[in-house]
Image (cartoon, rainbow, N blue to C red; front, side, top):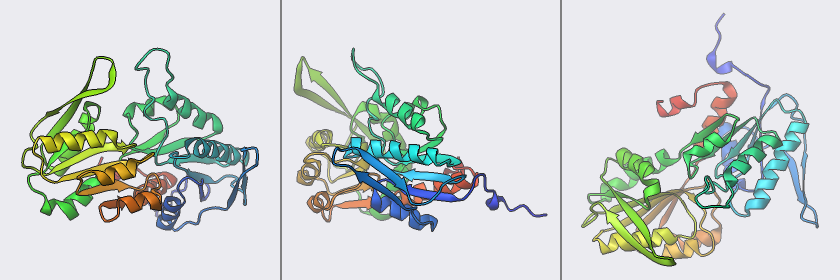
Length: 329
C-alpha cells in the first residue's frame, strides 16, 4: 500500500469564491489552482443592503473566500462577512477568509486615550461570521495575528519584491541602500536590506510642538552618491514617501526606487507619486489599481502578482501540507 502524501484530503473538494473587491486577482488565483471560481450573486438593494446567494451547494466542502478590503472598505468588509455567513449556513466544512489586504490594520493599539482598537474588532467579526481560518499579506503590525483566536497564514510578499529587484534591476543600481520610511518599519526594512544584501538607512520624524504640519526629518545612515530603495508596507496618500524622497535627495541620493506591498493610493496618491523624482516603483496587486491610477504611473511601475503565493498557500492548506516549507522554514 503506497500512501501518496499529496492525495491527503482533509475535507471535501476545494471551492473558491470571490467577493467583488479584487476580481482580477481572484481570477489569477483560480487560474493558478486550475479551479474555477464558484458562482454566486452579490446584489446591493436600493437601500444599500447587500444580498449574497450561492449558485451551488458547498456542504462538506473546503471553501476559500477571496476578498481584499481596500476601497470601498466598508462595502468590501460587509460583503466578506455576509459571504462567510452564507457559506457557514450552507454547511461548508471549513471556511478560510483569504484577505490579501486587511483593513484597519493600523488601528492596532491605543496610542492615545479614548480611541478604538479596530483591528481587533475586525478579527472578531470575521470569527463571528464563521471563518475557521484566514490568510493575509503584510499586515501593518505583526501582532494583529494575536487578535485572532482562529489560526491563520500571515504571509509576506517581500520575497516577490526582493526577487524582482535582485533579478531585474540590481545590475543597474549604484551602491544601493535600503531606506526605511519611519522607525516603526525599521525591523522589516532591515529584512529587506539583508535579503538585498545592502546597507540600511532610517528616516526619523519628530513633531515640533503642537503644530501638526511642522515635522523635522532626520536621516540616520548614508545615502550620499548612492541609489536608494525606499521600502514600506503600504502607501496611502504618498505623504510620507514624498517626505522621504525629499530628505534622501537633500542628503545626496542618486536614483530613488520605491518598493511596497499594498498600493492603496487614496485620493491623489498615484498623482503625487508620479510627481516625485522616483525612477521606478515596485508593488503588488494585493489591492486593485484602477486604470486611472496606472495611467499616472505609466512606464514607471511594476505590479507583481501575489496570485501564485496565495494560490500555493491555498493548495497546501487544502492538502494539509506545510506552508513554511515554501520559504525553507
